[in-house]
Image 1 (cartoon, rainbow, N blue to C red):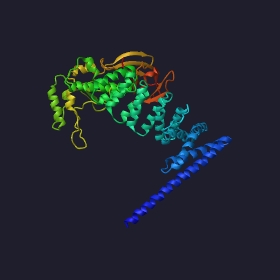
Image 2 (cartoon, rainbow, N blue to C red; image 1 turned 45 degrees about the vertical axis):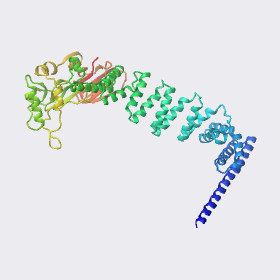
Image 3 (tube, helix red, strand yellow; image 1 turned 60 degrees about the horizontal axis):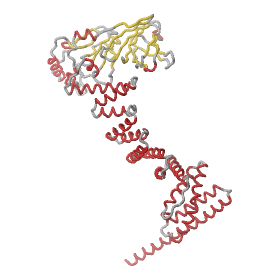
Image 4 (cartoon, one colour; image 1 turned 90 degrees about the horizontal axis):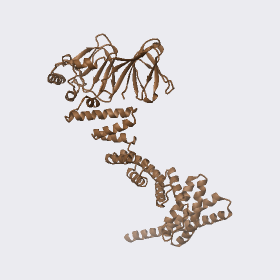
Length: 539
């Protein structure tokens, strides 16, 4: 039985050898027939498409002969014919390129590029046409457009190996796009680094390197790539904001603040940069508190604290606000009572410690950082703040309970660290409550300054008007609210924007670049007095 099995295997192997030999013979026969037809059409010159069809068929079958394992008696003939057809493969690539048939052109170009790499030609150099590099680049781009990315990468690398400078940069661009589409970030990084070494001042490759490190969440490499961009362009506003946000996340707030200051100096109209500047200012201030450091003076204090005010859009009889601390209170007693109230042991006696002020419509109360404050009942308050993204530490929650039936979490411990105990009754009356100054007036209008504190960089102006009144942005973004009247229309004398209508209590923004604009009563408000409150950055 064992001998039978061995014999059977031997016979099967013999049969397989005959099949392979027959395949090589059939391919050789087909290849030579197609080559003869190619030569015939070439000599007649009447059927170019047919000629190249025969040529490509012949090439493909000769390649089958070359790749067949039992090809000894056919290899020499195949080699001679392949050598003879080599220059015509280039002509075929050019022909189909001119015919706008990129797939066919790629077939011929690929054959032309691959043939010199065959093992049978390793001992000789096939003569390359002076168009070789151009053909390689064309083949690479065609393969890319046909989404044959492996072939495209191969030919882009081949083009780079030719040493031709003309399309080198484009090759790196295409290779970067391929690896990016494949999310092959390690190869994309390698190609970009190679490109950057050749083109060190080309920011496009560095921008792509930044994207690679963002995608892979590699912060050290990301910061390094950004710094390389900044070596070329120190004020690059594409990557400086990214670096600032990274430094924020790393807790390097002072470094982030320095960057935001640079950017804001370059783009003073950017609300996004202003927001970033405010955010890191707050973070720096928090660090100052947490580290037990001291703030040198009122000016420095103003730079790192929240700026806000409360404008009463409406108020009913008996409305009130809480603002500042009462004279002579004991701060230790107040903090003790706040802690016990948070535990539910007592009800915090707000009026024992905090000033309760009567409030009426159009009052304006200033709330510089560190001031204890709260809106009372029966009042609709418009908050005007330079730092709307920042929070206020809550000290007392008026016995409100969470879903678990327990007092909601508040921030007595953090809040007590930033309370300004000098903000007492006298201070509130002298500096924070309803400080209105008339600035200008004309027929049917008047303008008042309503705050804020002299150390604050936000200016607020109130306008009363019964007819059209002219405003100027003065190169600062204007944020306004219609605080009196049902409707008003906002227009640009030079048509910088389309006219639009706002309604009572609606807020609207006028970009700094608008310059002059007008506000007038509209609809039901025509003939009546309207009012706006406007906030902008002081210069």
